[in-house]
Image 1 (tube, rainbow, N blue to C red):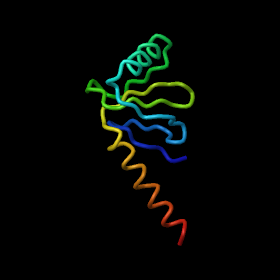
Image 2: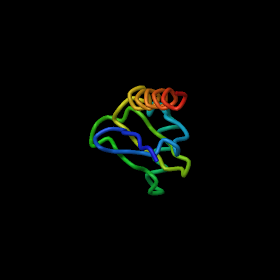
Image 3: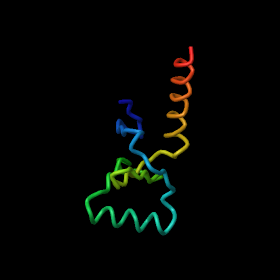
Amino acid sequence: MAMMNIGFGSMINPDKIVAALSPESAPVKRMITKAKTENRLIDATFGRKTKTVVVTDCEHIILCAFSAERIFGQASDNLIKFMETEDE
């Protein structure tokens, strides 16, 4: 199982990700508040500003301090490299 770095030594399983959202909209803010009250919120920002909200298939909400482009950009690069080596 390959893990994805989401910053500051935190890793997640990319197969469990359902969505990566901006934390600015009101529905996402409500989702974060609800997850916090239900103990489903994981804060991986280490005190920094939240730039990405990751939703998992088990309905956990993960707050990340890095942008989605930075987090998932590395994942797509790894996927491309994997596909290239698999084709050879």
